[in-house]
Length: 137
Image (cartoon, rainbow, N blue to C red; front, side, top):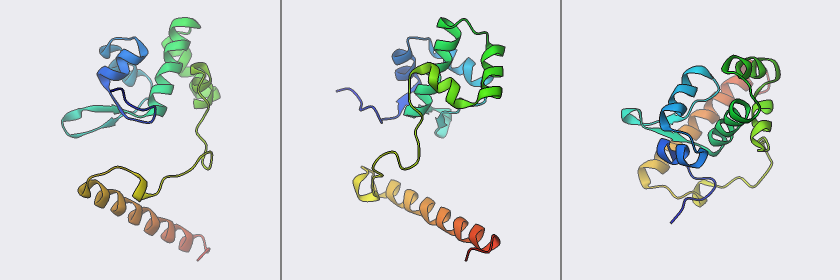
């Protein structure tokens, strides 16, 4: 059974999908500050769909378009992530561009649901503090 398009990928799955060795992905993380997969306990990497799109853009720029590592870094600095994403053929993910699942729609165990709910509570509290500071209470 294969994973869905929105599923997180391990480094081996990401490497297979991009047709590059795992050590190349680790190396790119050291050279491109915008490549930041999630890391779990023990340092295990999990690549989100946007990480895969970004890696695909980097690979295209390096291997097909003939950019050097410094060239891709300069391109990112001057034109931003949209340019790197454009090389991958992916469309940028925009807020409000699709349905947002509720907590009830996400498959989580009880501990994961508690952590996610707690993170949401923290974000709501931070927004309330920012609104108060900005006089938008």
